[in-house]
Length: 261
Image 1: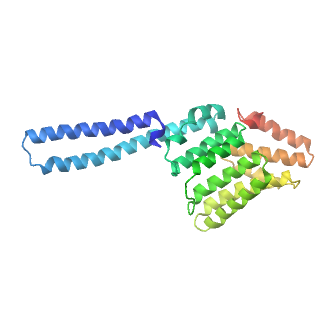
Image 2: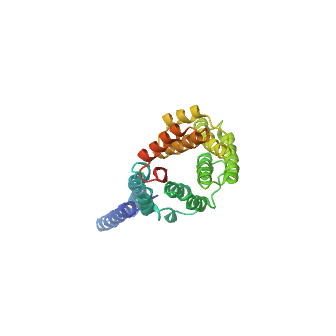
Image 3: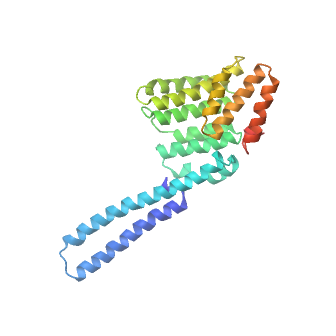
């Protein structure tokens, strides 16, 4: 994602420019001293290779730091509008049909969803994954279908959500032997989201499972999603006290996301 940020692009080209300057100086020096031609040629190849490696290493390092900082606006500060303002242009800087384009679009989609705009979340996700072959790419397939399922639930498109759940189930089945950890993570997300679909259809969810998932949640947005599901389940059970408890948790911990509204 070097091209996504000014700092990483500058570092990338600065290293390459420095390598070029050193190569030019080396040629002038060697020719002036009358060295055989193969010596500066070999040195040029070595320096060009080192410059290429270092430019990519430094560029990727800086872009990773910048990306983590901006993602913190969403996942730590829970300020989706601030995140969207800083990240909106990033996916379009990535080549279509690549992993970087897909992942950055998924990040942006999470921002839209957290701001309460599930429709734009779906559009961002679909656009980012367009032209990308997901066959055998289970982490990316799980990301796409898992997130899309969540967004469709947010739109209350229950039939579409059921179809997406079936797609996610297919990914889990395909990867459960080769990538057990991924299959388990996707299964937890699928079970949570299928529970939300069931609640919408009048089926009470397994509160014990959802509460255990809250304890295991490593991300604020995941925890908020579970709070919302538990609140909806409490309302279905006509347990107004429990529903209020989870509504209060969402408001207290939801930052500037739609969960706190």
